Image 1: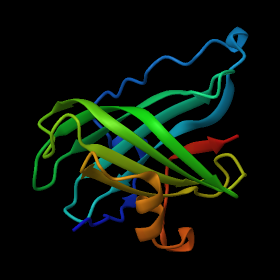
Image 2: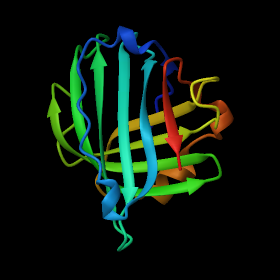
Image 3: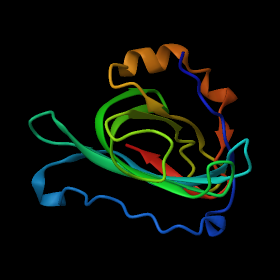
Image 4: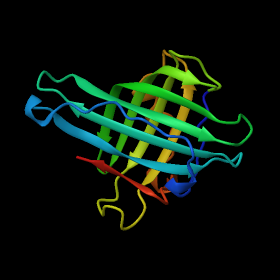
Length: 168
């Protein structure tokens, strides 16, 4: 059974782990930006979770993107993982991103499992909070359609108190 964790946003300053983001395709490559941004959240166990993601569509229609997530504190202690984006699906101001976890440090799920990130861009920069929902450690057989079928409407996602996601 898959479960999603809703997280309340916290300040980026509270995130003590340094998170590195994969390189973007250069503008001269003809890539079309899809999403870029970062934000931090407070998980139900009291840990601070940070996400960064960057994704472009290349001229041949393939996706090029990656992201990172870090957890500071809480039940599992500090952890970190990197993911490569394998699929995305836009819906208005919302975007679902599915990635395969390629590297972990103390994460409670293995390399090869999936992470899903649902982002709502409020269209106002940092003026009012974007909203976000995430799930990690999903089995490799999960599709983005299955993830979308089990998530609540974005009005039920929690605000990003610090950080900003831009969906193009």
